[in-house]
Length: 196
Image 1 (cartoon, rainbow, N blue to C red):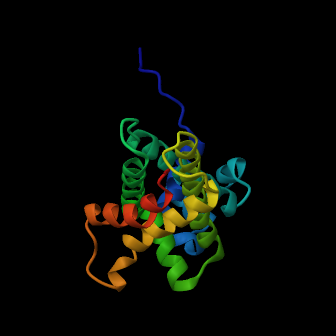
Image 2: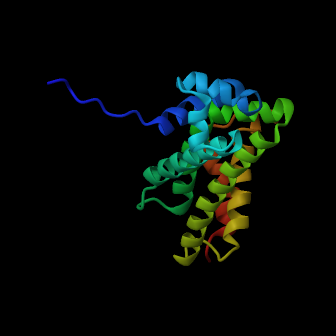
Image 3: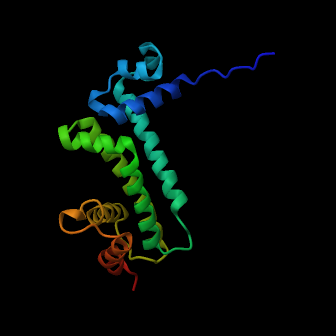
């Protein structure tokens, strides 16, 4: 008796091929023909799942955001103070972003040619990170770890501070170590937000 073959998940096959194409060529240079070729399917198969390239891209970006959220959730340690947890989560998210080929390619495409969909995709990821941090800012405030504040605005400025200390600090001086980033972050943020 021959082993029964599992039917191929064509939708997943298309998504994986599209992700490879966006990672390699960027948003602008990716075509549905290219995705079909990489997936080993006819172009019509793609259209049974996705009406257009934008919808395919949005699905991939949503998957990336899910991965980031899961990574952040696995990183949280309830026994740590808010600032330490926040730093650990931000470090993991930055590492992910720097190593994830799609995020790197989209950032390059935005920098080099300013493709609106690539910019929108990265902004969607940033909004998801801000929303995630905002939830934890709100929880820390409710527990009395930090002063009451606008969680979303605070999360946005915290993220921008972190990015300035890590990814963008080399413009001013040598890159900071993780410990230095945490120290500066505590100085700029936690001492100012500390519940008294």
